[in-house]
Image 1 (cartoon, one colour):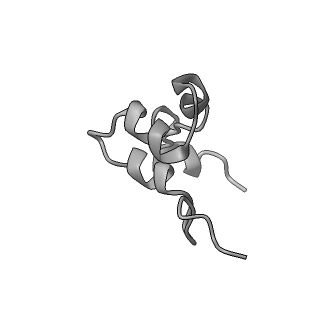
Image 2 (cartoon, rainbow, N blue to C red; image 1 turned 135 degrees about the horizontal axis):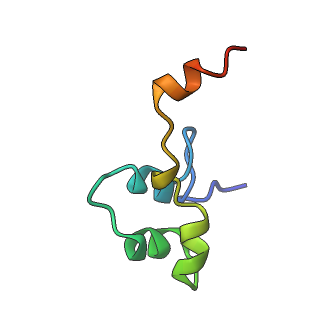
Image 3 (spheres, rainbow, N blue to C red; image 1 turned 120 degrees about the vertical axis):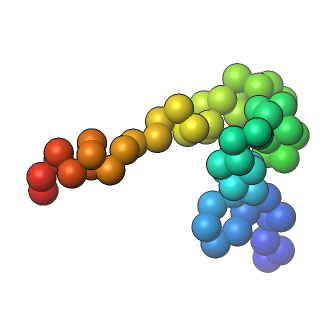
Length: 60
């Protein structure tokens, strides 16, 4: 079965694109093949960045 060009071993092309600080949701929407930007924003994790200090507080 042919692999979808939008995916790779690390994640998806739109995910990798959105890691760029200058990325635009509209471009990621096109890359993902989404009909609406709202769908793309569901997968946009740029505002969900976690600092190392926050991770260290978990204390597992």
